[in-house]
Image (tube, rainbow, N blue to C red; front, side, top):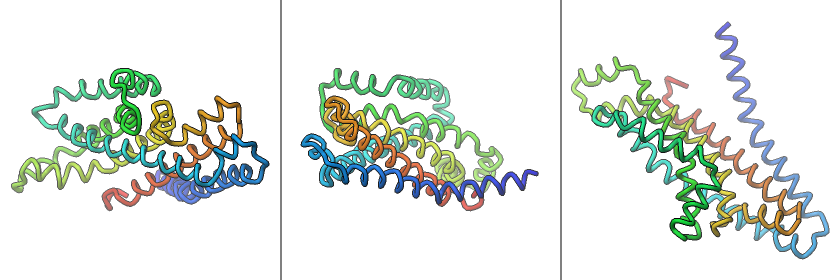
Length: 252
């Protein structure tokens, strides 16, 4: 029974990996074909054209990549640190702070950061969104390392490995699947919340959504929203491929 369930789960995962990019192409291609074949008024034409859409999509990608880099640079080292014997007491505190960051509304975190710093632009959007997206990678790094069989750790130490070598060669490789799953979640969060970057002049597809809403142009709003959804689905698909290909071979 277990083997049959596993086979069905793998088949469903393969179908999803094949179907998700096709769904993105159909969804995005459909809205763009519809938008570009309509008679657009001057406001719609100024926002729905190849140059504007490419620029906003590129800005959205840049913001998402910066957020992801910040999350990785902070969450993985911090997650590793609080699993060490000398800092385990700090794990609940660190996870609690990260949980508060994600529990708060993303737009609230963004606005509070803006009011505190009075910054605008890429970093004014990237830093609070990174805080909002931090928890999945941090939590999964901690849980992944804590889930490693203590017998394997002791075996590594028994053959003369240092603490750093045990971390690099045993703990982190075995924690990779969970870390990648957390990163995948963070990426989708980053792409979704990056639409809020428009409120602090951070660019991105949120500009289309905001313009369409404020100027009562549903086509502009829907085009921006569909592009953002398509980008999030594409990033989720790439994350699924990374989980499949980068995890330890013996655990795939």
